[in-house]
Image 1 (tube, rainbow, N blue to C red):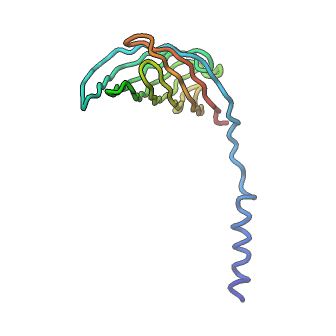
Image 2: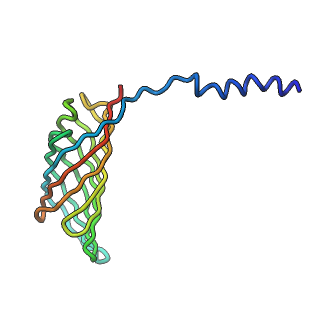
Image 3: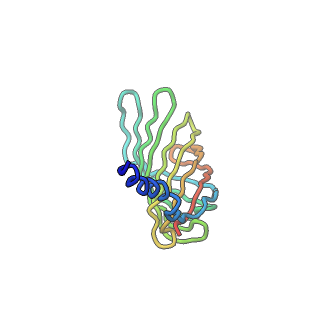
Length: 160
């Protein structure tokens, strides 16, 4: 019985910790959106197992919530059935929600032919973009062999 009595205050303390602990003070996520155009300078093309693998440097101009230029390196794999998947990471320089700085934007997409859909993450901001966290979707359409245009939408917040 003594062990039970001695353990009761500890149990109460453990149960109370979530109530007594301060709550994190992250800001509420907000939606931002806009459009982009892209041009890719192809650095290599190779074939493997019927797939065409294209590496390049993308220069992307963004407007809307994100307003500025992103320069990214990436790879696109075009499969024999016409589907593709792509991944790139690059540095964005400009403004987000009126704050200036740089941030890393990583994107991953899939699609068929000239249309696709993807996910993006914005992080590692500097200057006015320090503390920016965003994730969302984008819809690229290839407008030429090395060009694309599209729209994006993100949920974002800045650390307090």
